Image (cartoon, one colour):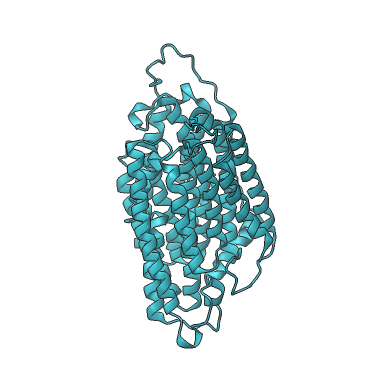
Length: 495
């Protein structure tokens, strides 16, 4: 077994267990940052290694896993830096027992579960066995649920309950789909391991009927975790009530984990000759997500929920690209990366606004440039990145998806994609501009001196993410280009 993969899992898992028992807040926060840094270093080493083709391996880092592992590791490191200052501003209420041992206070649980969340997301990205993949996706729900309840309010409890309920129903359907996938093996091939490599091999023989049934249940099950409409209803509540660093990880990493699971399913479908059926499911859920998210987004009065519905739209755009095939797959995968960068930055900035204005209501926020000019400038830049305006990378990923639809002559689908994109741009721009212009809306603004000095931890992490999103608009690194092309080839696409 690859020692590097074990280290990628073991470092955050061990640190997460230790964090529950560390007495010092400073040491616990240092452990969080050290783990994020170590995981990023291990990820760089893993990305540099060539892919090993072992069809029977349960743990393997293939091309899709490399892409999403890189996104997760980068985003977690940035979130860890942000969390150092965030936790100081919102300290935990951990108490000591008579024996002197710490109880499970909010910050101890927050840090421990956050590190375990990184471990199980890593497990998703290196899981090559569909049974292990299912267990890892389920574990992401269990690890992240306590993070949503950090503020311990009635609304956060409701969000956790909805999150657990919907994702548990989805994961149960995904388990049934996994059983159907196992049942699709013909009698002469029933001894094959339930791994991506074995089921995608040329000599594997799968029953089309059972495979299609598996695809439907797996798409519905994992689609609930990905935030596809109409299975997205947990997502706005979870993002609205979760601490901003967690919202960044939920939108920028967790949704990608579910998308990765679907890519692995599509890899098997393409190898078995059912790639067109799998692509049709991507198109269906993608079109529903893009179209319906616009209806909820354009009149949204909560800016964190606004960003949540934007996640539904963007994950839908990525799914549409994959469903189109050809260069659409390239554009869809690139868009998943661009969305993670921009949305991660936006959620971190939303935390700055929430601490300043003490409200998530749009009407309660104005004069951002006068109060927090750096965060406001990044807020506008993040919106432009999410909206896909040049020169940000999302412009080119969206354009690639739209161009593929036009090249294939799917003008009805093209119109269905363009109309909500335009409506969402108009709706989001009205909200974003209202928040940053005008007179300061703080009740005590007459006594305060503006602008407020912003700490580096509040603006440097989102700046780093948006800078990368901007850089991808000027050119795609050759290594990233090769990696995305490898994923396209594994899905049966020829670019």
